[in-house]
Image (cartoon, rainbow, N blue to C red):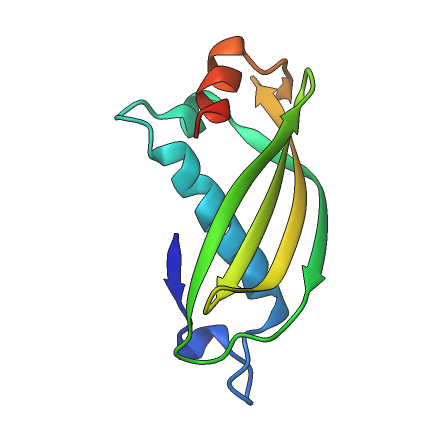
Length: 122
């Protein structure tokens, strides 16, 4: 997913404010779920953030075009693990390691085999 850095994303020096990298990752994760031939997996299978590790490697600046990529790391019964990388000009500038837990009716719920299969081929 491509994202352009706008003025609202930056600090007074024109550098992307650190929390915005997490917003970019959230958008890319959401698009990953939305792009599924009309079936709304995100509404049917809500996930909540459990853990995140963020590594900032280089700054993005006003006007930059960034590419956010999702890489499925794996599953367990309740968790989905992703690595998300933000690139600027084919150089990785940010990495996030993310664990999401599957929620149903407000409670921890096992991830269905259908969802695991769908996400595994993406």
